[in-house]
Length: 155
Image (cartoon, rainbow, N blue to C red; front, top):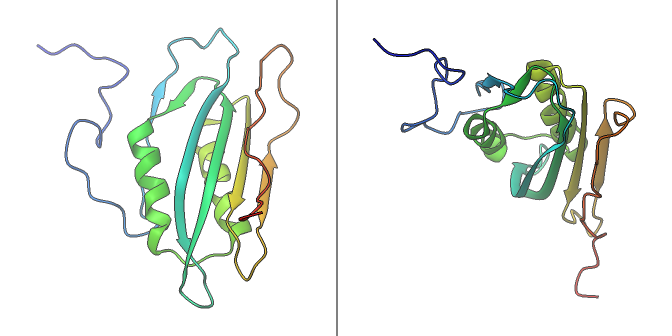
């Protein structure tokens, strides 16, 4: 008889999983936080995030930094990777992509706090950076700087 664990309900981890056709079709999964009594920061960095310009269909590139303080749940990282990859053929402006990622994680996890920084590479010669957080960072949790310098081109 198999033993039930916090990983038992996962459907994507440990096997071949195709990239979802769209962010709406992507399934993000969560696992129970094994340390819910401790306030700590989790960081995911996606330095090769891609989406499409909704007007031209040309690719857009960003460096995403996602910080969150978990509550009862953690995001399962493979499902997050597949969700982020689903934007590859999705047409949306930088602001919408960045906030869609952040809000989807908040909806799934109900974390104590989340911050996302979308550092977009230039489109039309202008880099666009998008920042969002759910509120002030919780007291007593170390939240490091996102560490992404402003875009300087070949400068």
